[in-house]
Image (cartoon, rainbow, N blue to C red; front, side, top):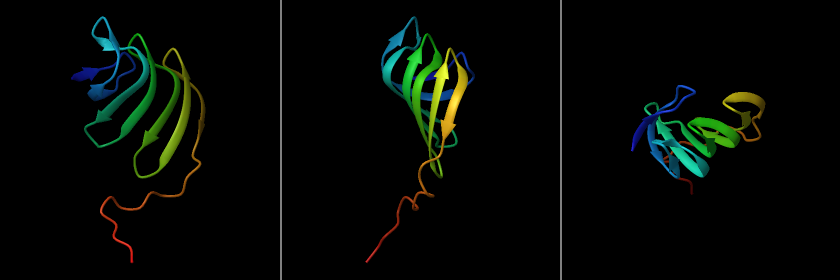
Length: 85
């Protein structure tokens, strides 16, 4: 389902919902630029621990849509079709 969250992310969402908005643990939102947000949503806002996968993997903690902590623990991810010997 395509949604625009209350903290202004738009994309295809898979996960629990409440009143037509993302709400609950283990929700995944894929934005038009290919970023993947996975985490806990509270009434349409990021509201807990999140992982963002883009060119790198990032970790965030939100409270009522407000960022309170972030980190990047991984090196740059390999290209999606990387073939190794």
